[in-house]
Length: 192
Image 1 (cartoon, rainbow, N blue to C red):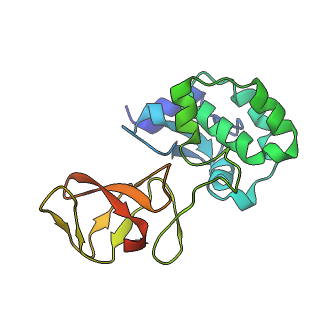
Image 2: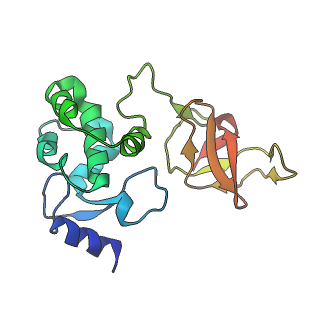
């Protein structure tokens, strides 16, 4: 059975965040480890657009989180926590966050994108052109890089897909090159 059908069955053919019944699609909650049902939600276009574009957030739309934050499915809880964290300065989202409990590993996943951190403490990863990088982005190497600890050279122009961000250093990202997971310095990549 396809992920979309499984999610539709799980959610009763409704957006797992706001309950809308139209324009639904699968939304993968980043960063993914295995992908699939345990890392995806069924969401409407309105919710997805506002998740991906923080400047478009409509506070009233997200009052639905009062119900969906209690969803038994972990990816729904993660997205609810991220959205409440993003809007917490409005007052009511902070009250909901104070009531919400996530297991330690789930909270770590929820925090993986940087939501919930104060802006002055948030690490921002930028490519060589100053473009902000996020988990799951694809980049291309802009020069040949020797890989420490091996004889491998990552060639200029190599695409690195589904990158991961280092949570302690804004200059480091991780990705696979020729099947090997390596750490790459952000000044040597350009977002695709």
